[in-house]
Length: 312
Image 1 (cartoon, rainbow, N blue to C red):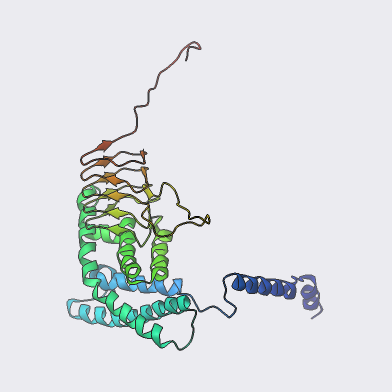
Image 2: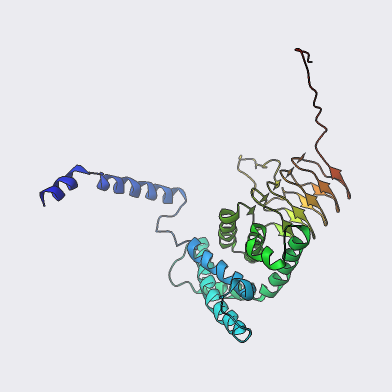
């Protein structure tokens, strides 16, 4: 007993003072953002992670679903899983709508709108499956190390990232960008591939290796495009308004047309166009448009050996 009392008095963390200071900072932050009351809850990253895992299993039940599924049980698994997932997704969408409106609790408008948006999202799932089939096939055909499309699906980080993106892009277009952004960041954390959910990406898209790839919000990517690790499709500069505030949503990222290959480490910046069938070499820094069929490489680097102190 004496030892426990002694230890308790020895470790005085100043908790009461810390709690008071943190409360004061919270109140100040809410006032700055013009929220005097407790803000509505945000969508849950943890719940969205479960939803995305489940949606992946629904889209590919034979490979990402339960291990003991048979032909008779697949449809039941898909239907039952989808029913539960959509109910949970509805809750996350409703949270975002309530966060935007500043309302919490019973909100009939958010409830009805969330149902409509969730239904619209669900109706697009067959289209997503078709796009993903094209992405998987493009990866299989584009990588000599891939032994089967199934290997691509279960092993390749680029496919993981594009599954997340295809689903997040729908939600972004439906008007729930926060849920969409959380989904894209789940893939970013898992794969190192950062694709903003606003980016428009055509069919048969292949990201090889993938680590360090960055694709910005207003990027537009055509069909049959292949990119390698550490490629950036970014903005050249950030426009500001007369008050010095960043302008949001303006087109500032590249347009990549069909059948383009972009090799590792290339950085392509600004609202420029990479013409159809072009090849962008590794580590190229590009800030101007190039026509169809271009082959852009680094300038030749001269290497000379000097002896006896000779040099330039």
